[in-house]
Amino acid sequence: MTGRTVLSGARVFDGTTLHDGLAVVMDQQRIAALAPLEAVQDDLARDDVAHMVLGGGILSPGFVDLQVNGGGGVLFNDRPDVPTLQRIAQAHAGLGATTIMPTLITDTADRTLAAIAAVCEAMALDVPGIGGLHLEGPHIAPARKGAHDPGRIREMDDADLAVLLGAARRLPTLIVTLAPESVRPEQIAALAKAGVTVSLGHSDCSLEQAQAAFGAGARMVTHLFNAMSQLGSRAPGLVGAALGAPGVSSGIIADLVHVHPATLQVALAADAQKDGLFLVSDAMAPAGSAIDAFTLTGQRVFRRDRTLRLGDGTLAGADLDLPTAVRNLVGVGVPLERALSMATRRPARAAGVNAGVLQAGCAADLVYLSDALELCAVWQRGQPVPLSPV
Image (cartoon, rainbow, N blue to C red; front, side, top):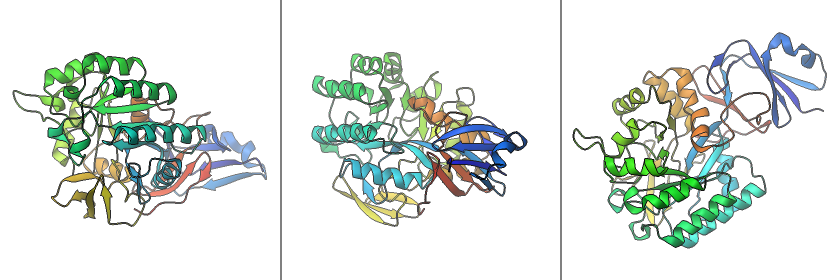
């Protein structure tokens, strides 16, 4: 057997554009070709080539999720090691996200070191789906902590900076979410120069502080609108800075709870010329599992009505998968190609991850969606992936 498979009968989204009449040829772990069906007749004539005829729907690059705190019933913060990463990555692959950035929220210095080591080891072992590491905190603003443990929040010092610079040398992709008021501009500049994707979030900063951080090299904003200074008529805050800054990308949680549909529309309109808004799940342990409660840094979180909340009602991550987020976008009027790009090409580009597009030579990471945008099948490195519970 050659491990070669031809997929036909669905529209093909290449990361930017939807195409009719194309077949996708997978050769083991890679995409061999995107071509009209008549152009792959030589493949189809071979006995050792599988041909799957799909009944409509859409073939898309595997989704890319830059903010994944957990999945499969476990949290990265609880046990930052390779088995945990494997379980989380498998759960999210079954939800359509074939490339993820495991995310450690605010924790101790020792736990941060363990997370860095775990992702380095997982990538050395070539664990499928692990694209790098996202450290969300601990250098954030206590006033905008959300569900983060206030006792572990701290300003960045020289030792913290050295750890992050060392991690940047070892990892192909590192995102660090920080608040400008907790980090000096020269520290941001050092991180950016080292290749770190610096993202602003969990911040009560002013427009001017945010702009200074962007000027120093920050290029991303974490879960736009949530846990940050809001857009006011005379105080634009981090939201205003993010929407107005050229070259800055923003993740957004499109569960229609974290961000009201009307507010989402404002962000989409402001982003029309930037092409920088992308989807994140901000998933926690319940993703891809049936559990209805878990503990997050000592706080009990409950899964109810498609939300995750602390006992006092504070949102603690999201009960969301990216196919649902795409459907939500289309439901509020976003064109289908734009919605799909926000789960594929855009996040990959924002983080510099080699994923999110469908073309010859790229990894055979695919999702198959029905015409109603329900997840029907996933391939990761050319192999079918069992779907996870939603």
